[in-house]
Figure 1: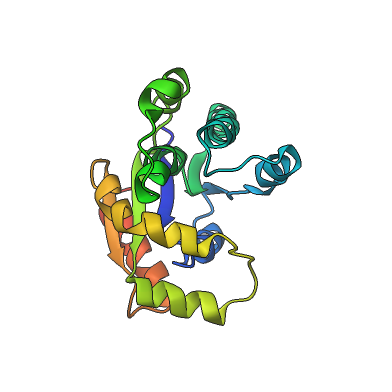
Figure 2: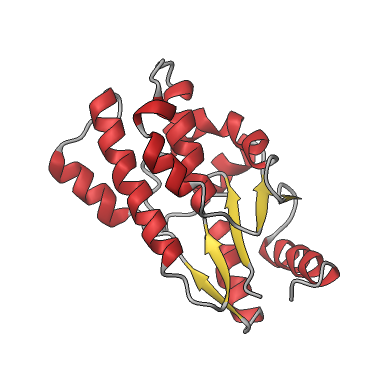
Length: 195
């Protein structure tokens, strides 16, 4: 039976790096990488402002629709997601809270959220890092734009508790290098008969 494992965690936490490492190690898994740039470009072309209710709702509709399509079209292989559907739901619900807006997102995006919640990962690997660790990694890695890092840090304080409601394995990555994180994850997956 197909397993869907998503890798979650803060920006610059090592999600894509781990996904690439697992792709090389776990030949029975297909890795699907996050690619928000087409939607971000569309948002920019539409001149949507995320700090207005109308702009935020339109933006999230695009992201939710794209994530549902991605999930529906996953192959029957075992899958590793570089961020999963739970991430889109988290951002949709917590962006307003983190920015002090009292928007009724649950009702405004009720139908979209209902459909998104049918898309779930079987397991979430959450790369748990302190903000200081994320800031250091961001400063030392110029391979990605990370223009929204400051905004993401506003959300980060809510993130770990959000993922605890799901089948989530927290991996402390503060003192681990890439190889140590990879070994820890592979050991966990092996011990739980997931590989």
